[in-house]
Length: 262
Image 1 (cartoon, rainbow, N blue to C red):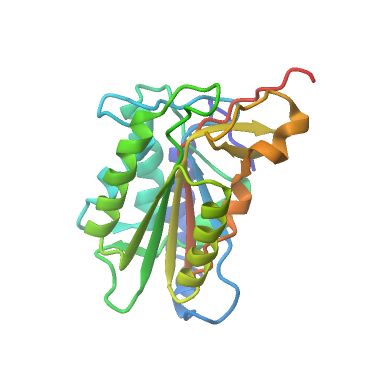
Image 2: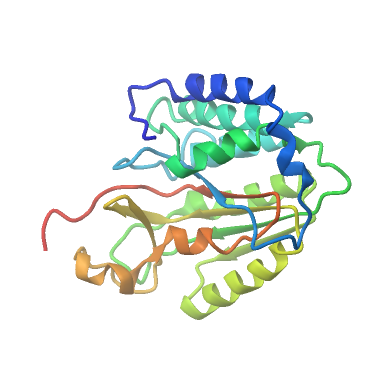
């Protein structure tokens, strides 16, 4: 399933979620316990549609997608179905239509499966963990810095803590070694948890349906032959969380297509 800018995604998704909420299958996710398996399949939420940019600093000083996420996390009573549609609607409002969020095609089924999940207040018996990963310093690359992303890191981490997450880790501008180490540690942490969240942002691109996050430690060459050497595939990051109930990936970066030819 693929949505374009002209389709009312929040409305359609909201209808699906309401229908699914009454289904006997909706609560099945709550029957799992940490350690039952390799973890639930990741659900990806994107700050923009394929081929589109995102704003580093919107009206509230950061990415409108981050602002929408923070506002929703601060709500005292929130289910996953309301959260999913609210994230899309609020991001569009805060960006004045510039950003139209998206959810991965493979994730639609998981969004429906989890619509009965209670996000706030957090159930006392559940363990929830998060990692906020930001690339904002591009002094070593031929790309502009992202000061809004740096500010969003603290704002999002604080919101997750207010929402009752048991452990929230922050990682900013890591080199390759630190990134690999942090992701391994987060995998181990999330394996003992019910729900894991990864928020990742920075300059990003999309090539043939795959999203790549660009670190800022070396010049980024707009050649597809350098893609694997100079970027971090989002799916590689998304495979790190291994919580038993839900693993949610929020990607705040752009999804531009940079290669016209080599």
